[in-house]
Length: 150
Image 1 (cartoon, rainbow, N blue to C red):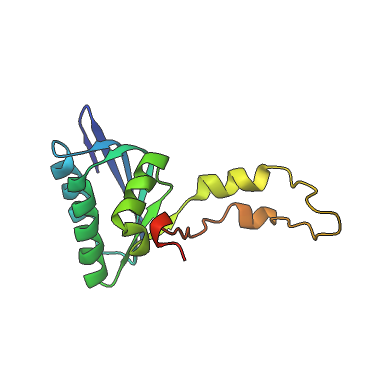
Image 2 (tube, helix red, strand yellow):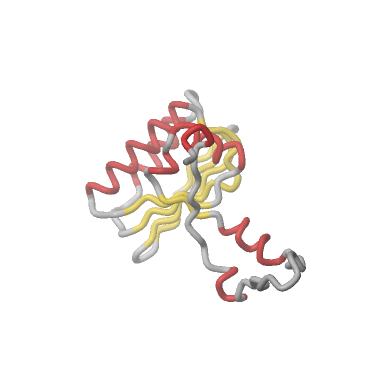
């Protein structure tokens, strides 16, 4: 399934256990109905992955839709997983507290970090390395709000 407009592109890929939803463009008051429609039309599966690497904008209407989709999918026994949000969208997720409610995976940044050379650091300190297989597995991201960081 594909829903495309000049400002939003949503594509659904349905598998046996995972529904992948790729969203690109902007989710705002003008495009949120198409975004909501795509999330609501996703069939019941254990995992719904929302790939956000090409999402430039997530407005308050988009945040409400994400939260409603999270609750709806969870009520069916599934999980909504946000994958690779852009820095702008990640900021919105942190500011609204959704990063504490939903699982957020950032595979692109994990792979980039694994490719960087390990610096020598302090003499005598053990060097950390990332196994190649682990670099390609998505890792959950935990973030804390700066005012709340304790």
